[in-house]
Length: 113
Image (cartoon, rainbow, N blue to C red; front, top):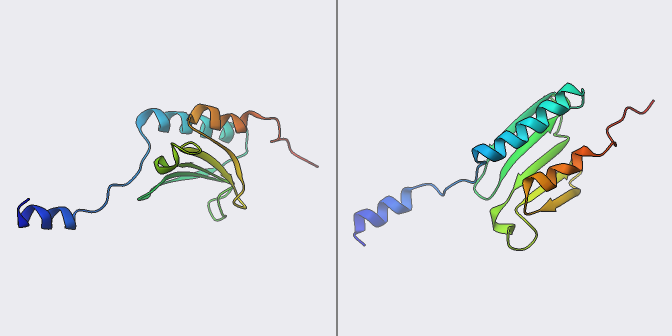
């Protein structure tokens, strides 16, 4: 390898993990459904070096209610996908996004008076 090529590779930033089009479609369909039901109002997408994170909020000024994380490094062990609650509790983890998102299909999103 030439010294110029080695220097160019050293200066190149590390690739970031991000969602593909199919994954974003699934996430935004869930988000739209939860907005229509009045549970969520805002979202954020982060592409980090080791993970892609889709965060959902009740209000933009608050901490995220849930984080849906894609961590390819964990794919062989526990699955690349996880849903993390506000306190850091992992609600569901697995290799398939559709299976992991089923945690939001439960009837636990009822208003308590």
